[in-house]
View 1 (cartoon, rainbow, N blue to C red):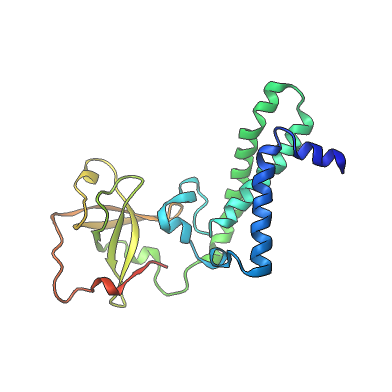
View 2: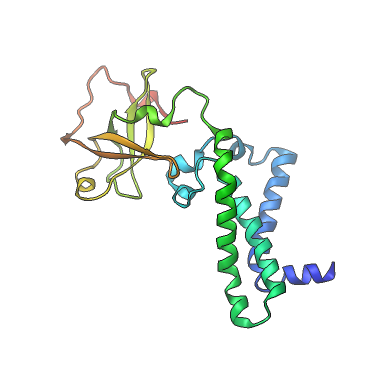
Length: 215
């Protein structure tokens, strides 16, 4: 047992030992007191909020799930590397290799878990493909942007949108864009300019009070 703790508190394992302790404390508090339960129950909240782990193929589930898996697997890999590798150069390469191992394991584990966190409200991401939305951010790029789109129930939803190339420069707050695709891993929609001018809301369109975030 003494050797185990010695290895865990030495380089390279110590790089992930502290994050692992934080992860364990998080889940202990979540189970005992409900702290962080909202993150466990939220479906795809982190991915929709701003890309986050979606860029690494870890979206579609609460952020605590892939983060915990990544840290735990990376810690295990760093412990094994610390025991098996003696030279300094090799040990220096253990943390990035362990991080890659953690990502690969988390990526494999997240894929089947996405089904457990599928939205149950009846509004699905791909339902918005083909609709016209209104850009709500000052710009839309390949890594940033939000827009408002009308839902079937008469309300509106704020969704993450992305655009690339010269078309992205035409999109600014108040401009209309056509949703033409959905990126499941990133939790965002691909859009293209729909017209050249900003949207002028009519009296019959939903007001700000009826906006809601996409489930």
